Length: 168
Image 1 (cartoon, rainbow, N blue to C red):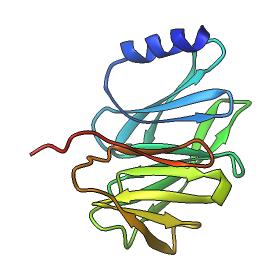
Image 2: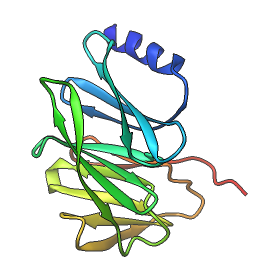
Image 3: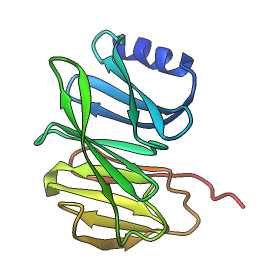
């Protein structure tokens, strides 16, 4: 399928892939090329082709999520949130706001927008936090220390912690 060809292309790219999300008919991927800049590529899901590439000041670009209500892509990276508008017709991203997070423990390394709750979940340390506006942030729950949460994801209803074995 075309999605398979797109995934094969993603596997061939260079740099360290950090965040990725689906935004409508596009896959948006951030690669760390040395902070503070990240290479952000936009792929058409139906063809698997790269339709645009930008270098944006997203730091490590740990995790990306898309809010279809606001048409914003949000990046979480080491205690900061970068909110970007996504222009689907031009296939471009523009940073609208950078926010220094408070109250998320040691940084924030994962983010997911959960549409059914109209809120964002953040991973910081061994806690998952919940926020509607990035100003008020509360602990949602603590996850097992044996899980190494590298990112968060949502199918619109459920929250998923991407993880694996913890490293010493």
